Amino acid sequence: MNTTSFDLVIFDCDGVLVNSEPLANQVYVQMLGEYGHQVNAEEYQREFSGAAIYQRLAVTSQKLNWTPPANFLSIFNEHLSTLTKRELQPVQGIHDLIRSLTLPICIASNGSREEILLRLKLASLTEFFGGAIFSGLEVPHPKPAPDVFLAAAKHSTSLLPAVS
Image 1: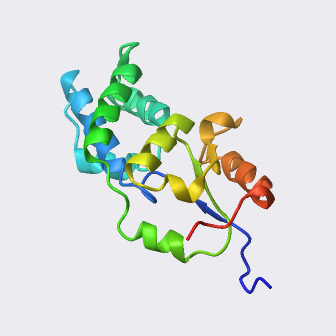
Image 2: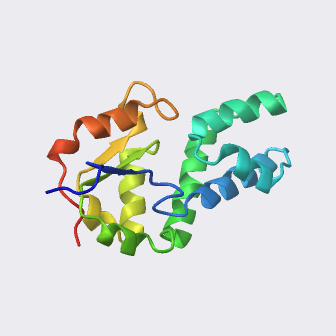
């Protein structure tokens, strides 16, 4: 008998399972500097925490009255991938928290499936989630719209409890 009022735990990836937000911000701010735009890294971390890169770029472009080069995103992704492979860490205590759960878990993130899988692997979290990954890029509207969470909840009956 389930004594909890929950049927599923939906985790975000970046900033919840892994400390990737500061890495993305570091690369973004550095690249803006290379294009002549010096911005405050702490302010950008606060303002864009949890935002998808295309949202971040749209707001920044408008604020700075700047059109990024066509290859900005590909260069950003390349630099972020290199930094992630070198420095990504799991959020402190996340392994113990997941092991303590007895109900199904999944991830709902705005990252691509490939990015999520890489981050899980680097943080030794893959075993906990299997295929229970839902990407905001695979639904009509990414976060903050609820689509990715609704997709995760819809499939919750087919998910297995966390691996202990």
